[in-house]
Image (cartoon, rainbow, N blue to C red; front, side, top):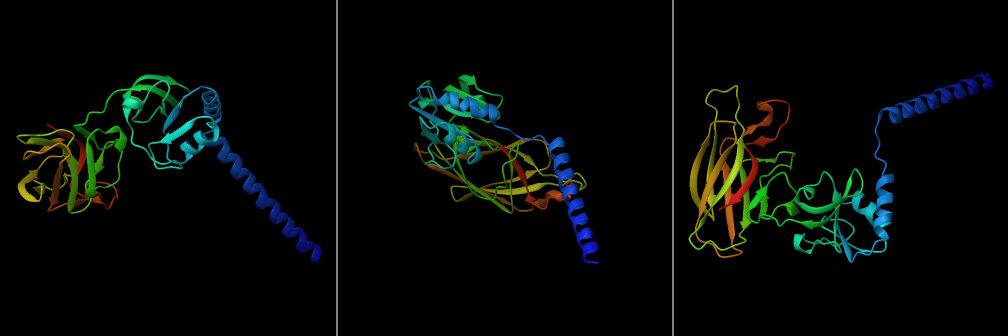
Amino acid sequence: MRQKIMFKRTFFYLIFILVIVAGIHNLVEKQVFYTPTEDVIALQSLDQKKFDSITLGLEPFRGVMLAANFLGNVKLRSIEDSYFPKIELNPEQISSKNPLLTTEDSCLRGMAIDFEKLTSKLVLITKMRELDKNSFVFNRRPYCNGMRLVPILGFSGTEAWGTWSNGEKTEFSIKTSEAYPSGGKLIIAVRPAINPNIAHDQRIIFVEVDGKPYKKISLTSSEQTNIEIEFDKKNLGALISVVLNHTNPIKLSDISGNDSRIVSVAFLSAKLM
């Protein structure tokens, strides 16, 4: 009887192990895993060159950790929060002696003037164009935008195209990079959330600028449009404070899918003029 129980138990464990092995085999066979061998070889080669420093524009932890492990002979700095003190990106400081290491799919790649493609993933930039200090694109990392736009309230997460407003209020401030002796204009490109199943649907927004009521906006189409805001004169480094009060936001799920976020407009870009 005991031998029979032991046989059943052994048979059960054998079947269990076979199922696990088959599952792992199936996963390995069908799943494309990222193997950094090519990147490691490129980093080891970089480490033999004489750089004063290398600025890292890599994924905050995995990418930075990989670089830190194989770049031991050079001073490293990171523009992302990581294992090193974070620094501000200054394109003027990027050079052949102080290059920027980033990835092919990074927004930094589009700013490169002189660069070397190290692998299918890694790029070494030795000269960059200056940032446009009067523009902001909502789908870019902050270091790829010259305009200093500080989100305060009411923004959803960044997506491939931009970001949604989130809730009944969106608030942000912009720090001017030049003086506006007679005032200026802020143009925000948005795409309103309009429910096609409701006739004459519209999003109604009350705008405040620098703490004062500015104007009411009615948006009736889901096509891209601009919200134009004029502001009074500003000194260099002054703040422009903007509040958008969304009086009738809707759930994204009311349009399609099951996304429960409460939205009014999608933010695409902003520009000072």
